[in-house]
Image (cartoon, rainbow, N blue to C red; front, side, top):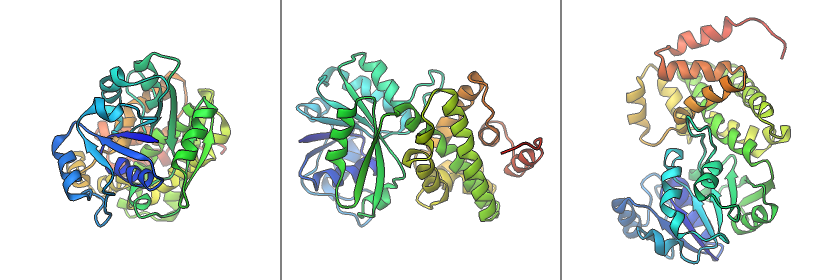
Length: 329
């Protein structure tokens, strides 16, 4: 089948290589002409060194042609560009196409997940939307490291179609019908990864990081249950799986950003050094808004927000967490 990927970052490129090896016809679209030209000619992504891009993948700046006759359309842009991407694609999409969102985030002010943005823009119940989420570093998928992920959708048939299209001998896809819960995990775990990175940057050990991951997941679960999500989602691949990989790995730009902040670098210096979008920072405003709206206590999210937006030092953030009243787990 023909599969079109909108977005030529590391994740979109890694997925393109994965899909073309399953004998799909793969198109990668971006409006960034320089990047498309570089990928098309050099056949290597600058952030995935030594991973050759399959010669049959077509890189293009022609959105209409790339979407024509595609069975699956993958949205792989950073979360802040998802609305723009689907608005530009809308007039070329057909209801029989499955829209797969692999971006992770919550839009500030609207508080919509990425799939909800797609559904709002398309405003057509005939479109089937799937969120493909889980513990997946592009750097590892690109070199065929064993990886598990979940295709989440209210439409079971669409989820199974995506499951079959993406699964191979190193990339195993499960299905799940709690798409909102899966996307909530995917967005908020990046904030917890920032906190874990700060902990490492300040020189703390495994005890502290394990505590951040555990209590961070408790915060996300608490919010998810208040919003009607399925508890099982938070103990699955989109939940505990994704938070562990993002909060502990050097591949994680959110962990790396937190590490630099913990070392004392400013936010501007941190973002310059990371050199890629840090989704946890984008998710913070929406997370605070969601927590306040639903009266859910999220102390780790609050102190990370304080560090990023209110000038709170990582040291003072730790002290504020330990000064909280003692409670039951």
